[in-house]
Every structure is written in structure tokens, then in C-alpha cells.
Image 1 (cartoon, rainbow, N blue to C red):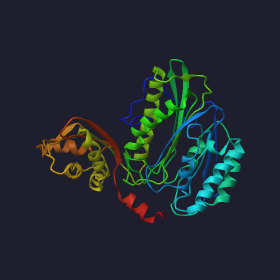
Image 2 (image 1 turned 90 degrees about the vertical axis):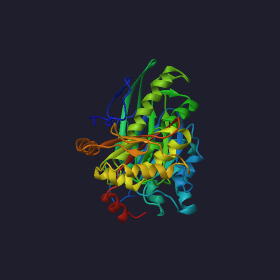
Image 3 (image 1 turned 60 degrees about the vertical axis):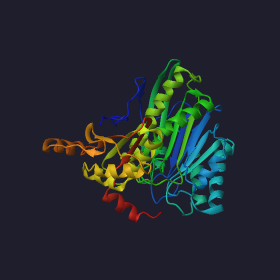
Image 4 (image 1 turned 45 degrees about the vertical axis):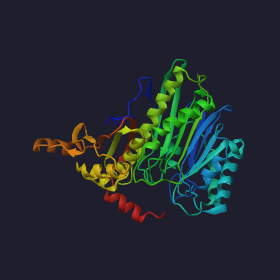
Length: 413
């Protein structure tokens, strides 16, 4: 893997995109973070604000039926006209009944009051242990403090949202458009309780381009489907997943709908979110290796098969051990295929064909050693071809280690 933000060989940096200070923000945005006392130590509450009155926004949330109070409150906000988000770690505010809803509403209202916005212009996001009270007075005092410390950097903010992450996940990119240069930045978190339909994850994205709300929503939806919808650490769907995308417009560059600039901004956003998604998988609790499974075949089959392989504990433990035990992939594939299907599949691992028409390919001793070496790297690629045509699905997934079991056996949730 290369240095810099675009580290994964699976994510290509568009030619019109360059990397800047990862803790920087686009023009017109400010952020702050404080140690409010929600966690025993460290930064645990942050504010992110757009100073532009005409800011547009888009949002995506978990598809879990059990959602946290912050998601409930945020869903009722003006999701196309958000100006700010208040986010905390140390408590997810999930499963606390009316008290939790009142706390999330109070956090939204306090942030709006301190920033001079309407409450519907503020999103709320909380992450941490499920089923415990998020101390309201502590959070509100933290909002008061953060509102007085807003600055043009997002370094502290990106740290305040972390839970079991090993380090902040953030980037700031310069994007060359035909109308001028704009900046695109994001701060994210996520390392466990991660399923292909999002993760215990946040991602907050900002650009100083001017983008209308419908176009921004379209770009956000497409890019989220190709990134955070395509990752798995443990196959567990979180209660709190939140993505907010803001376009402030301070650069003066307008991205017209269905224009070349929309395509170029979309390519930059796609690369940004896909790398952050891979970063989440690579930072999975106890993770040592990342796998990518690409499945091609009948439209209705590729998706369930890709997810079944990515979520299989047997596949994940083999990945952890650097063991090219492709029989586990075949088992997971067959279990996800429709009953009565003809198991005529091909499988490649790191470009080496190991299964043809459903049966193992004979490998000599040298070829077997090469295969074992190929699956011992930090990233391992799997390509599976099923019967049928027209469909393709991709999922990034982590290995499953003793460290993951040890961490989650002791983590109160």
C-alpha cells in the first residue's frame, strides 16, 4: 500500500484530485472539540458548523429497525438545509426511551441556540455503549464550551468522535473543476459493529463548492452505496450509523446538475468515501488483513453471495491466518445461492484461478507456495464468477482474530 490518504491498491485517486492537510476544512466551515466528561478522559464532543446561510446538505442513516435517539431526531431535521452537527462519543443514546429522546432534542436545541440557527438546521450523532444514559447536563455543557472554541481546523473534531478506532479517519482534498478549484473534506469513525449496510460509523463531509440539494443528495446516495454499504468487519448492523454531507459554497464555484463538474466532484467524493470505508475495515477490532470479494453473475445472486462470503466467520478466520482455504468460500457461496442452483463457479485468489466450474484446480507444490504467499499480505483479492450475467457486487471485509473476540468479550454493550 502507498503512503498518503489513498493507501489501498483498490482505490484510485482521480487525476484531478490532490491531497492537502488531512485536518483542514473547506472554506466557510469551522469545528471544535472538547473533553466534556462523557468519557473518562479525552475529547468526546464536537461541533461542526457551516457559516454559509445557503448551505445545502444530504444525509443517510442506518437501516436497523432499532435506532438511537440522535438518529430519530436527525431524521426530523431539515436534511437538505443542515448548517451544523453536534456529535459525541462515549454514549450512543440508544435504548433510553423518552429520556434519551429528550436528551438528543436538548442537544440539538442547545447547539442551535449557541450558533444562532434553527434547531432543524442541526443534526445530532452519538456513538458508544448501547442502553446506558447519555448524561444530558454534561453534553449540554460540552456544547456550550465547544461553541466558544470554533476554528478552521477539524483535527480535534475528528478525534472526539472515536470509540474503538486506533486513530482518526480524515482527509482534505483539492478538486480541480472546470469552474475552479474546490475543497472536499471528511471526518469519519468506525472499527466494530460493522455490516455491509453501514457500520457503527459516522462520516461528516464538507465541500466549499455550491451544489443544489437534489444534486448533493444524488451524489451522496450513489457514493455511500459504493463505500459504506460495501464493508463488513463482523456483519453486525449498528443502531447509529450517520452520514452528513454539506455544501457551503464559499469557494464561489457552482457545480451545475448533470455537468462535467458534477461528474468530477462525484468521482472525488466516491474515491474519498471508498478509501475511508476501507480504512474502517482495516481498523476493524483486531484486524490484520483486509479482503475484497468481487462477485459476477446473475443480478439476483451476486449480492447475497458477496455478503455471505464477507460475513462468513470461517472465511474471515482463514483470511486472518493467511490460509488459502478456498473451500470455505465455496461453502459460503453455495449456501447463499438459490436452492437447486447448478454450482458452476470459478474462483480466483490474487489473480490465480483455484476453482473452475465448481471444482478445484490442481496446483503443484510451487503454485501452492505462491498462493500461500499471496494471501499473507495486508490486502487479499478474491474474484468469484457465478452462472448468469449482468450482475456485479463488491464487498470489503476484515479478518476475524482472537483479539476481536477478546475485545468484545470485555466490552460492555
